[in-house]
Length: 260
Image (cartoon, rainbow, N blue to C red):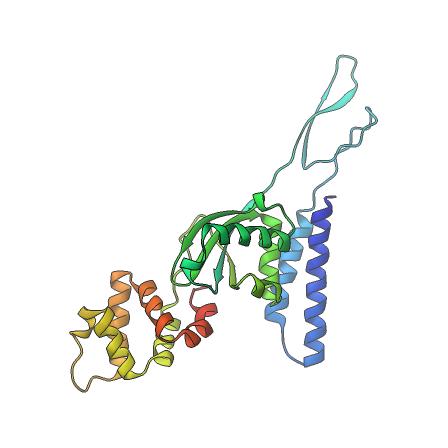
């Protein structure tokens, strides 16, 4: 069996054990974090590669698939072995400014992340980088992707060193996860006073500001702003402005901004 595969299974088991011990010690229900790890562990165990051996030639060969043929005198031999690596897409959200994520920083990020999930930096590829917060869509081996998710669910401090505040598996067959409008609305309520909201719209969303009238409540203004940004696909731009005006509240909401 592949050594790295065994190591990843062992790390999953250790994470589950640590969470279970923490649950017992604190008397807190951590099943929402433990159960996803158990499911990922089960997937890893089911994916364990099988060994294929050429007994007649006296050489042990292992692989995930082998093509076996016979020679003219009927002796069996393995003529071809294929190793399959299944890749997955993972979205990570970083707690840094987009302009800070330079090419050099991207290379450093990949090197450090590869150390965490136990693969070569060449096994991880950046597919897309988008703003709002820095959202990086990565492609990496399936086992490494599952390990990264488990580290996030277990709230491992190592991810903080990489500025990672959220990890989610991407569905390559469907659209990227969208901003959660309800959380954006909650952020507006919490991060901005009525006066701040009015000023923000005056400076950055003039068309919205022009619809405001005397006596209009803060919640009404937020509704108009949200409707406009969703219609114009400008929620990401709105978040960039909030990030500048109230960075503390913005960072508090970042892990919840994107729909699960």
